Image 1: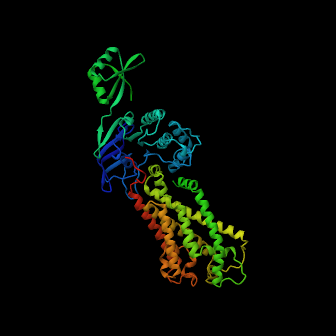
Image 2: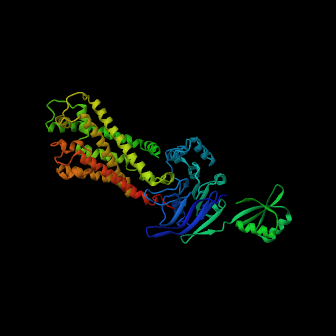
Image 3: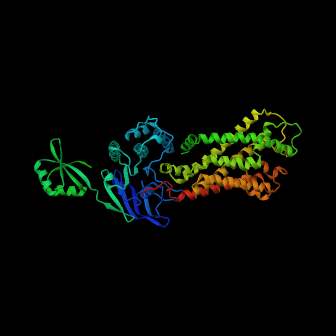
Length: 281
Length: 278
């Protein structure tokens, strides 16, 4: 993973009217990294996305997106190379999903119809569907919003409650999109009120507490392939909450629930047994 | 972004455009009698003379009270009042702005849209007027009686230049009216309030006109009526400095001021009109 940073928040404050929404928020996001922000409703999560996308400017501190400092300046500077899905996606209701994306693509005019088709297929929507957006379900709108955010291959994608309204198939497709774009070096910033919803996609998770951002342990379920049953026994003794899963290529698999990545690595290194990470949920 | 704006506007506003064209058609029918009566009471039209198409077209663009002070500004504001507020209300602004280099680009595109719409509106005005003229069998080549023709001929001016001046002033005047509408709608975040302001301005213009106050030369809608200027006195307003030069400066300064007001507002504003969750 490259260390090149696509997004930097440096001591950012945001005050709206007399209300301080964010105070001294600092974090960064590297190329190909997925960062999540969790917090309760009204905690300022969406404000962070607004600030990163140029829909709002910081009251104090600096925000850098793809090397460009985002400040009002003379003409209201905006970041480039950003895809965004913020709040409930609202489209032109009387148009089809494809037509909506086609219209939006005309703003930058840098992609072709085929790119829009590809983006729609990735989220599981039929590009030739003649159904108007007003007839779309919440899940379909969310899928269209995701397609809208990824279609121009931005280097930074900002998602607000990305899995909102998605069914299991939609969540699976969303996970595949994240993996594909991560490999290309796209950085992702997710915000959600639900830790469970986003932690499985994120490399790091922050939590908004008292208007500022704290690194939150990204606790996930780790599927580990071990060499033999003796190793499984050792792990079960030391980690009584762990569970045995289906074998993988004949080798035993154990699930370590609610663990951070560093804890898992340290645990197996101290134990001195060979292990292989199968998947994380 | 202009391509996006134009195609979106046409697709979204088809019904509104049709309604505006129908109202322009009605206004043209009304203006036929109005222009005729105006020339008659001004003793410009001999008995049993018929109104020609050039007289009718020039007459419409100089029908001060009802058409130029009320119908055209209000219809034009209806056409363009929501081109910014709709982006906010529909939430599309969240998709549009991150695709632009800066917010200035957004505002300039909207201003360009207003200018293009003023050209389109001018075309609608001429097309509907010609439709009415053809429907009422008005002659195209006939004696011309409108005071614009008489005074231009008397002063040795070119009628072509007068025509061009009238059309360009009309387009620039509409652009100014459109930008006033846009500023009010953007600052109040309400297209309805903007249309209301234009209606109120129309009444103010009419009130000043009825009481024959010279202060009317300082009002915005007076600037795009060529026949109202001092050059065409006694039919125009006999104030020495109320010339086309005066109005051109007024309109260009006004347009620049409106653009500055729009940029000042968009430059730093938090785009948060869309319902917020976080």
